[in-house]
Length: 482
Image 1 (cartoon, rainbow, N blue to C red):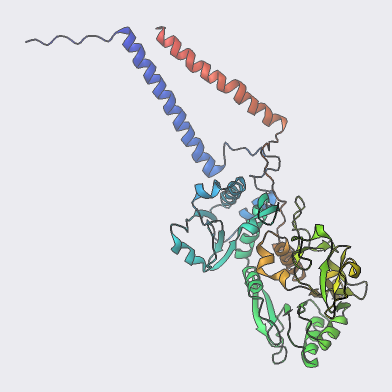
Image 2 (image 1 turned 90 degrees about the horizontal axis):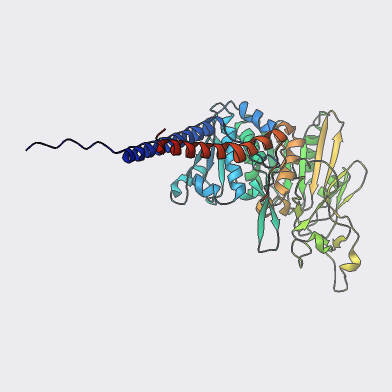
């Protein structure tokens, strides 16, 4: 039986096939263009435009220079999957973009990876920190690692003791600083006095070591101070020192008239008598008062009913303020603090309380009244200078040890930034401190120049409609058989 010849395709069928082919080809071209554009954007930053008012997703010139000048291999590790981290908050997305922009400008020296420590907890063991969370970032170079917490990366606004939200991002500055720290070869030798002192400084020591301070313990009574020690810290001593120990401190600060040394003194809060030590400190124009500072001004108290802890400090001097946010007020706070008094004009009052502050004496009885004890502007941190502008040693007295504690360093306060900036400057490490303004993202945050606005308008209102019209016209003509 002969096969019947195939029936030729009808005109309608041909039109349908051509329409389908054109549609498939159009979709294929669009998909391929999107894939190519995404790849180019990922690698070269092409086809991206940051039109936020503060250029929140774009590197500052200072950050670009840091990335371009990195000579060692640096790894920025987010301890979450990329999608999970970026979806948590617009500021998390901004932080991720900033990290990848730094990598893109580093000529391969900086890499970014995302590791989920929730599903892969062994990954956290590399960093030797049991308190890591999925919100943390690790910046590492060889064996040097710096962990960045949420409180390091963002500034928080507080509605109440139970609720706070991210108001701005300082992640660009913080990641910049971390890169500089882990790649730096400079080390500041620091000694913490071990005899007579409390041991409540572990977190502060950890922070110092993360920032290239080589910390060791020193017995003033038994040890000689090595010549390469740059800074000595006396932290809440529980006993007085001998005259011999204090003579060592004086020689350390004078340094054969070469100066260039630094002493940090944090008195104890218990009111233990230190006649010799207080007399030594007093020689440099700073006195320590018997008692505890209080804050009567409700607006300066974090907790309304607590007059002694989480007290907002005012700046008595402009020194060391450059890394404190200028866009949003990030407070430096003090806890239980010994009041300080300044004995001469050469001393800088660094941090003070409000005009409604005062002193609770250790000897206060039932007749004592806080309202009547208000004297105002109680100093809680001061600095004295020895030598000249060319050769200078510093003595800094901080009335509160809690200023340096983990609770005050990590709970969205300005303490860490202020104190670490202060230490960097007095130890001649200012070049390592990066200052980038906080970035703010709002719900309607668009700012563009005239040229950018023109091209956005052209694409939305002209190019896209013309492309749709062109596709529709093509299909129509094909269907009409022309």
